[in-house]
Picture (cartoon, rainbow, N blue to C red):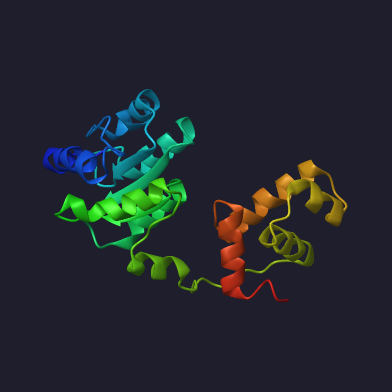
Length: 202
């Protein structure tokens, strides 16, 4: 999904030739609002989304594709050096991010890696993702800390309910409240925040 026709045309020409026909462009649009419908109709293995498409924008397109066609792998792209849009796209469900270079052939190895199940990020963005947060320490009570440790250990809702002696519904409610308190959107991000803040070793 890209609003630059020459870039898309370059991929259309290069992909079949350089991948022995393994990859080809099956659809494209510069309209972020139409991206999810196009992906749903074409059933690609991979969707490339330019984050700087006109409103509603690339991040919204990533989220819409993830909702409507969750089996499709999504890679966000941008010509900007600002990591913030890339991080937003990853939170929206993209499996990877690639800088939008002037040479489409430079994108082929990482795109093939994504098709093989890998997540791909430039080194600078990976460092930004892994950099410890300088946010104020989170004040959690004992029960919240137990819940967070269980989440970080990968325990499921049923197991956590047994450990905390509460219902599964209560665990889901507590988890939602904890995610809000940590200002994250999913369990993986909660565990990462906790690890950076040193909350898991207590």
